[in-house]
Amino acid sequence: MDINHFSLDQINKMDAAAFRALYKAYYKALVGYSIQMVGEVEAAEDIVGTFFTTLWEKKLSFRSLISLQTYLYNSVRNASLNYLKHKDIESDHLQKVADHYKEHYFAGEDADDFFSEEIYRLLFQAIDALPKRCREVFLLAMEGKKNDEIAAILQVSLETVKTQKKRGMSSLRTKLINQSLVFLEFLLL
Image (cartoon, rainbow, N blue to C red; front, side, top):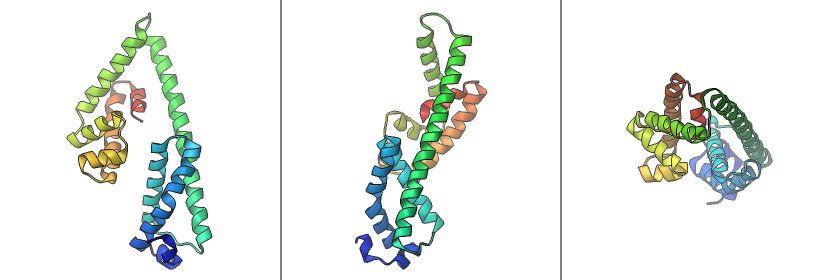
């Protein structure tokens, strides 16, 4: 069924069928809107997917279809801008840390090769120490698989994939900080 077959009251009550229709009616448009800002399909899909999950959990109420549409687009715009801001901060931080380590700890022509190899060695060592499910999720993500592809391959829910990524990042962050290589965590994003 399409969204026009449901009343605003059903949407406000987050009737499951009405919510599915709302999702189907707006998902592609909101992803397209987000792509215009973030420039990445997977990031836009994650932003919109997370937004709909949050919308379902908040159980908000809207006075009109226009206010609902405005909320949808404003929320996705704000989430997209926050994503870009976070990405810029991480990129700047990663560059500063990498420059610091290259400048103080490595010299010579082969420094970049050694630096890269050592980073990946430590990264994979830390990933190998993760619990089995976290490790599987991370390795598939590093192969460039999207969250929904990982969920299908591992036959788990999308939320499980996201949860495992968060737990894994937390564990890796702790291990890598202990090794004074904070910047490695940003290679996984």
